[in-house]
Length: 376
Image (cartoon, rainbow, N blue to C red; front, top):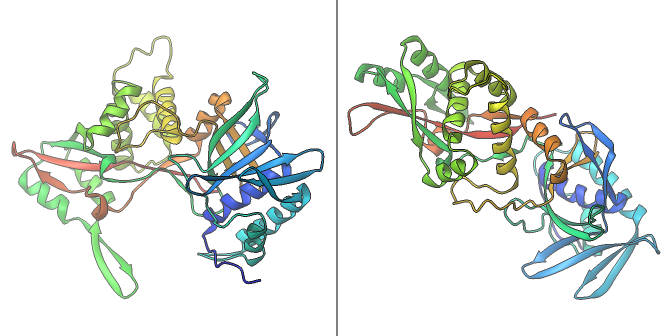
C-alpha cells in the first residue's frame, strides 16, 4: 500500500513522537525548574483526542482490560493496537529524529499513522494547544480533558514569544543629535546568503555607540496598544519592566532571562521598596512568561483566559517527556525563567533598530522582544 508523503522538521516530528510515547506509557512525570524528573509528581492518561479534520475528533482511548489503545471515531472502535506497539513506534521515531536533518519523512511511522487513522503529522492546533489529553483528576475524583503545549529540545530551540511588530518597544533617544542619528543608522554589518551579500543594522555596534555617547534610552510605549493592554492586565508597570529588560539586553548583550531579572533586582529601575523582599522583578517576569506560554498573544486583546489549560509537555534531548501541569505552577514558572533567553529577530522584517525622527524633532529607537527556549 502506498503511503502518504508526510514530511516535517525535528520539532514537527517531535509532536508525533510525544503522541506515540504518551499512548505507549500512559503516564507522564512532572519536573522541577531544572527539567529534572519528579517521580513524586505524575499524571496518568486515559485518552488523547485529535481533530484530524475540523469538527471531527478521533479519540485514542486506553483500554486497560485488553491492554490496548482503542481508536474511536464517530462512536465506533476503528482499530486497536497493544500498548507495546505504540512504545515501539515511538522508540523508532525517536531514533529517526535524532539522526536526521532538515525536513524529512519517516515511512514506517507514516504507515503506522495511517493504520491508526492519523493522516497529519501535526493535528490542527488551537491557540497555544498542541495536544488534548484526558487525565483522571486525583483531587476531584473526576476526569479532566486538558490542552497542553508541546516543546521539543530535539531540534532548533522553539520560541516562547514570537517576534512581530506588535512586540516592538519604543524608546526616546534623549540627547541624540541629527549627527548621532545619522551615525547610528550608518553602523551596519554584512550578511551573506548564497552569492548575495546584504547590509543589515549592526545592533551591537549601535548599542556601543549609544553607550559611548551617553545617550539615554527612555521608554515611551509599546508599538502595539493591544500588547500594552495585555501587559497592564498583569501589572500596571509590566510594560516598563519588560522595556528595562529589553534595554539591558540591547546595551549589555546579556540574553539570559534569569540573569536579566537579577540585574533588574540589582539596579531596581522601577524603585520598589525592597526592605522586606527582593523578589519583585523575578516574580513579575515569571508571571509574564507563564501567561505568554498559556494564552496571551501580543497583537490581540487578552481575555485573561488560559488556552493551554493543562500546561506544557517538554520533550527532553534524552527522549524523556516531562509535564509541567498548572497544578504545579511554581515548577513551571521556574522552568520558563531558567530556560529562556532574548533573541534578535530580523530588523528589516519587524522594523526596529533604527533612529527615527519623531514629530517633536526628537529621535526614537525601537527594540523588539523575542523570547526563545534554550537549546540542549
